[in-house]
Image (cartoon, rainbow, N blue to C red; front, top):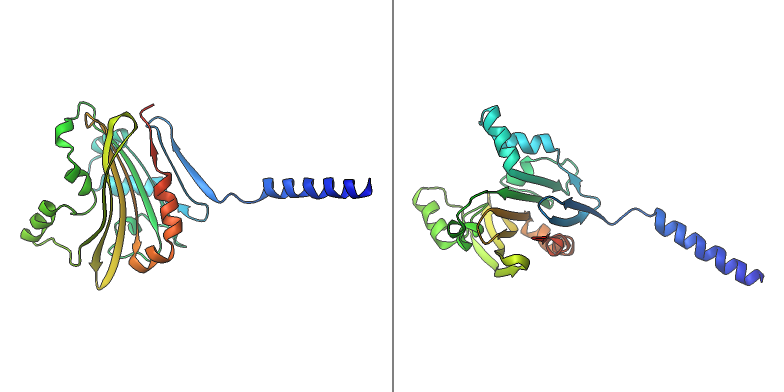
Length: 218
């Protein structure tokens, strides 16, 4: 009986410890757009006001309000000092995550090509890179690592891209998933980026974020 009680006590203690342990992930849910993914629990969410302000740029208040109504955006930063600037900075040393839904009611599905999805953040398609080069806006050191066309539930189409650009002599890696509905009325983006060495060292963390990205029509 004493041994049984000891076993039960140990089991209860293990259950309590497990229940109280810090979660490994932060789960991100956008139920209205049916978007879900997770990030490591130690990665900090970037202030939403900073995101909205940066996205609005020079827009007046009415236009900025319309932009907020048509988009959903969230971002996370694995660095000690999370900042929206790290999403778009020339170089970042820790992984950052940027997710966006763009609602394009009445959108023309034919206009949302796979190349348009590829080029959401930086020129990736050959056409976009040639255009950037012709206008003096090209970045050096482009290399495509992954270019997978995908289809998902409900007829979603899209691409998963991993590519490099060299910025100030440092290779930056971009892992981007871009999806669109058949009619082009919704576009879903998940971008994770950091230096190539960071991407390699923390690949398991980055891959867990990318694999968790779920978009459902229902």
